[in-house]
Length: 306
Image 1 (tube, one colour):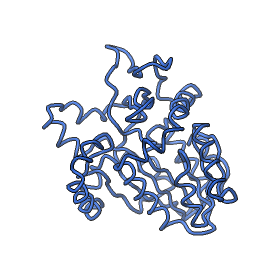
Image 2 (cartoon, one colour):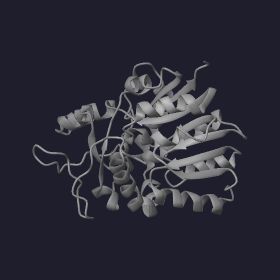
Image 3 (cartoon, rainbow, N blue to C red):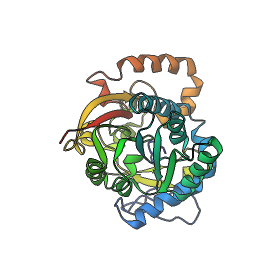
C-alpha cells in the first residue's frame, strides 16, 4: 500500500477533507482506531485490489522501495523462522519470503487483498508456509506469537491510528532478539523541500507537518478518488513509539535525493538521471543527517532482551 502520494485538494472550507470523485463516498472518518475508520480504509483497498498489482507494480519508485525492503527482510529472516507481515496487500512479499522457506502470517485490513493473497499462495504452491488473515495492524500484533520477526512495507503503518498499541503488542508477540523491518513515510522530505518552492508551490513542501493529511490510495483508477487520512511521522517520532521494547539497529532514507512516489511520471522522463541518483542514494541514505530527510525511511528495530 502507498499512502504517500499527492494530497487531495478538495477539502471543504472550514471542514474535514473530502474524498474526490463519486462511488458514494462523501466524507472520510476521523483518524481513530475504531471500526468505522478501519472499515473505510478496507473499503478503499477492496475497490483497488483487482488492479493493485498493475497500478502499483508499474510504479518504478514504489517498486524500488519494495525491492529494498524485501531484500533487507531476506537478509535478516532465515528459513524456518515465523514472521508477521502487517499490511500484506496482494501477498507478493509474503510469497517471496515463503519461497525462501520463511513461514509468514500475512495480515491486511482489506478482505479483497487477503483473498488475492490466498489465491497467490495457492498458485505459487506456498500455502503450507503462508497464513493470510483479515486484521488491522493493531489487532494482528496481539495474536499468533511468538514471532521471529515482523515486516511491513509500503508505509502501511502511517494508516494505523493505534501505532503505539502496535509497538506494545509486538513487545509481547515478538521474541527477544528478533528484528522488525518497517518502511514509513516522513513528515519532511529533502526532495520536496527543494522542488516544491521552485515549482511555486511552497505550501506543499510542508503539508505533511499537519496531524493528518488526506491522501489518495493510488495515482490511477478508483484509488485516485478515494482518500484516507494519513499520519506522517519523522523517523524520531516513529522510532520513539517502539523504544520501550525495541532498539534501533539501522535507519536509512529512501527518496531523499530521488523523487517520491507521486513524481513517477517525471522520473520516467529522466530515467537515466534518476538511476544515477538512486545509486548515489544507496551509498548515502544511511548517513546521520540525510537518513532523517527521505520521503520514505527504512528502519530495522531489534527486540530488546528483558
